[in-house]
Figure (spheres, rainbow, N blue to C red):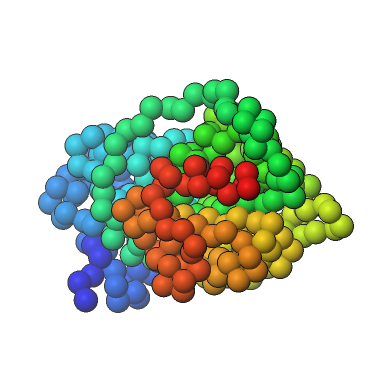
Length: 349
């Protein structure tokens, strides 16, 4: 099998050496070169023709975000941001995703061996997934917050307060979610989302969505009640589960082992939704690598939920939706642009 050619761009020689050494253990990957700054990287992109770029953010001479914007204009290719994200830097990382980065990953403290090994397993899998992306990035205008439609305008807000909408996404999912949430009305049933992303980054992602939507969007806290008009996003590095007490739905946020190499895991969320919401729920699995959430979506379907998978053409990576389709977990397989309409139709019934 042809190896995926990777170029590592990081100003730290320690990071470059460790990543090269760890990736050399993966038979699927070949590190064709490294660069200590974007100027060197620019020349190596031309000469080495890598399939995937692993890019740091904070570097001398030119920061990674500026380099990313230039790269996407002249030579678009799959880029994974691998950076020591801080709360102050999360907004920058979010900008990287909007500019076309495939993934953003947190670079752990290299002295913590088990954390580095855990991160490498995920990074290597993300590199393989990124190499399969049919790259067609275009710069999008920023979405402005606008007044959304309302179910009550058409008298459709009937028996929806007990409904729960569960969404799972990974690679390419941040932009897919941006396509869906701003189109939904302020009194839409409660939504719970697991998006694979690093700790601390989820709050920035939720805050940016909150500015674009008429729905309230925020990072989930343990014991948060699910209600119409509220979107809860699983915090990075924690699983989020649905629970029920009488007529009240709420979420549990907890630690736990990785599931499908992920924490938060979509599988964990979907299984809990199947158990506690059943036919009162709707599930949607969006673009992403691997199979996290596919079996959980099937459990939701078997419990009476309406289930949706994003179709191959509109996915950045047709991994999780493909696994769901193969397991016959999806009632509907539709384009991203049609998912908001499908959700509106199903919750109004």
